Amino acid sequence: MSIDRTVTVAAIAATTALIGYLLSNAATRRTERAQRYAEALEMVERYRQLPYTFLRLHHETPETRTNLAEMLGETQKSLSFYRRWLTLESTEIGAAYDKLVDKVRERNSDFRKDALSRPAPAADVDIEAGYLYTFDDRAERLACISLMRKNLGLLRNLL
Image (cartoon, rainbow, N blue to C red; front, side, top):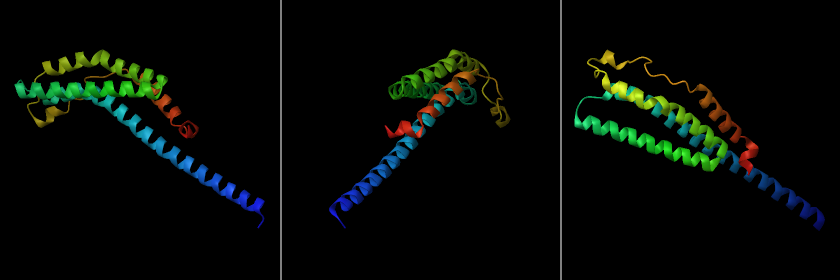
């Protein structure tokens, strides 16, 4: 084989290996980003569910109040983390996530107060509360998810 041909074959092999590495790395980053987005959305859902959790768990005891306060504090702390992280990831996604959290926050405090004002479940059947606390956040949720999907595109992850 001539030297030119050897160099060409080596260059093709190196390029193929580099492309394979970049694609593999992009797929890994995409999977990690998708997982973090799912966790951020899960935290919004956990926040949405707090009124139901309060309704099911509250008893007028200091221990219960402490547990519910800790649960609320941890949820709010996690939401703050995801707000900052998503803004660092993308200002568009961060703004959409902020709108989603703000939309849920509009009613969440009132719903939690209502849940605490109701009698604690007296029987197992009382645990099923139905849909007492609804949030009209569909537009904000879909906008946020749409931007997250766009950001998960393969070309975006090659960068």
